[in-house]
Length: 353
Image (cartoon, rainbow, N blue to C red):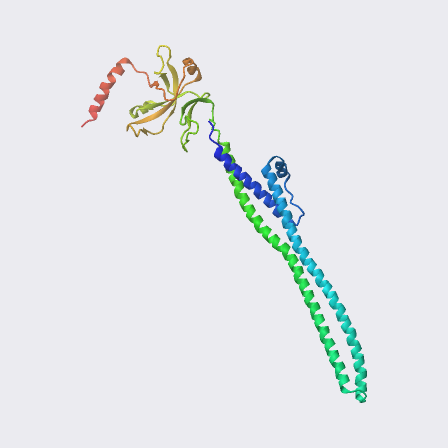
């Protein structure tokens, strides 16, 4: 019997697709984490991509996404590097201006030395000296501004270089977080796949032994199978023939393992069906109570040897068939058999008050 596997296969397909998607994302993330130029998908994954359009789409999609993210980061870095190059050119220009100011200041200082000497001799007016000193102060201030601008440009370069490093660090942090989430989902999906595959292996209901179907709980396609309930009963072909019999509690002391028995199958024609011999194979250790009838009894199993079974010929034996069982207890004479009820009553009477 085969159960309907539509839902299980659909669930398994969803799980496999989820695992494939997580695998593609993981490969792309690991490539970004390593700083590789392209994702390195496993060979078996690439082999499946040749025949499975869904896997091929995942490979193409994650590869394209990897390239887009890489191009975006490289574009951001290129802009920052271009700004750094501009600042370095600016620093170079500021250095040239600062050098020119230094030369101007050197000339002014030389001129101030001569004018101060002439002023001490009252050969030049005071305004001439103050004008030169004012010009020297102005040049000193401009030189200081150039140095400050240079330091500021160098500081901006350091900030931009940190931003370049931060781009990769942010990417790695993001990827590490994504990979941790992917690995968690992957473990969960793999467990679900194992369960689904195990369910799929149990779609075909197989009996532990070959035999003939005796009873079935489901008779139509699409019928409902109740959990923990038997689906069908099978009579094993290779199993040994045995009969379960009920023993009255007052007779249990006369029954023991190994006793010979005679069996008659009342369902068959008694003239053509011989009496079969067997032996007591097992006796229950305690009494059994029937909840429906309220009766109590012991159960015993009668084993039938193969040679006795062959005497039945080709008759079909079905579980539940009525069988008359005669258990041989001890040898008795006809007189003792007839007088036993009387002797039992006499023995009982002597025990009464």
